[in-house]
Image 1 (cartoon, rainbow, N blue to C red):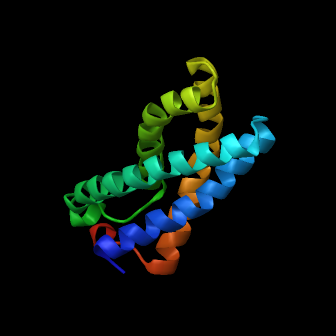
Image 2 (cartoon, rainbow, N blue to C red):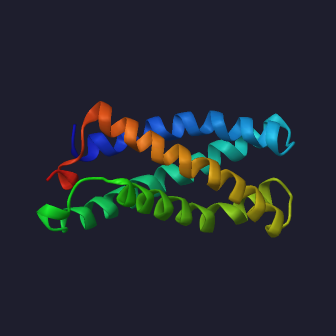
Length: 142
């Protein structure tokens, strides 16, 4: 599976699972009520879905420009992918969490760092599993 279809499936599956995980983490780990946590999870997932499509398009465009001998998705490239994706989300989600959950920017940053650490591992594992199930995109093939 390639192209836009692959990107939409990847982002949709990723975010569907992420909404459940984020809601649970906000309720159980941060003590927020389920209603606020659920809305925060859905809105942050929507932001992440759009960012996912943009980031993966840019990442695969960069990846396609690499020399043939430098293609593939080893741990360094997967780690760079996860760091870039999650770093962009921090910039977008900290103000959202602070406003919606009525917490300070500092508390929102700490909350987001906790989510970031969890989701960096999740992103790495999800991407690896997705690539094994659906194959690598053309941009990563050697």
